[in-house]
Image (cartoon, rainbow over all chains, first blue to last red; front, side, top):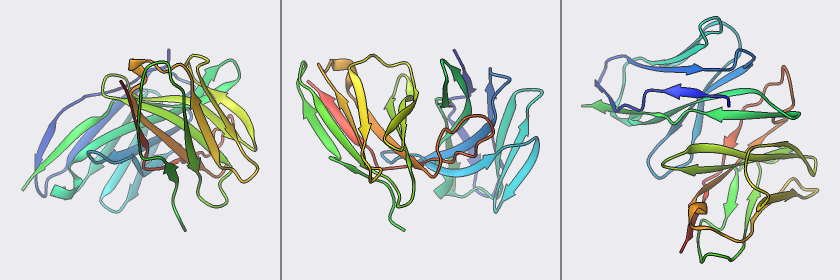
Length: 114
Length: 118
């Protein structure tokens, strides 16, 4: 069973601070990694994808990948109240029997306090 | 470019009935994946269709099935509904989808269908 683990939170940070969200995965063969944001009552929205070790920056968001440690993280700089949401980590890997799938963590709830 | 659309948005059924959900992907996207989201289990992969063929499959029973049409629109069917099938059903659209090793497979979700089984 492929597993993707996230701290469920809630993670509370003050407005303007850096929010750090972490994710670990069990399958060393995992190939692609994604962060989705899900507001309450809405569907997940893709915010970052990362495919190789290192950092990838997009505006206030930075994704970090360390395949040796099987760890992926998301940093949100200058956090805003509008960033308050549940953040889902997703990992793409071979799941057996000829199938590939995207496996999601259960999400970390982030609350940015004004 | 229009996003992913799903119909209906809300559905109430009783145990033992069957239900069909529909998903229209982003124009030009050929892959449609289906997911079930519940508070306890989170987002779980059901299956993926590409060019009218089921290409990848998760660990759900055979009561869950799907199909894809030549215009890439997809339907998901659940037969003999159980109380535990109450969930948000999401479809995700992708240009190439879960295409095997080395593929880039960003997926974009529709708004979902909220299914309640009584």
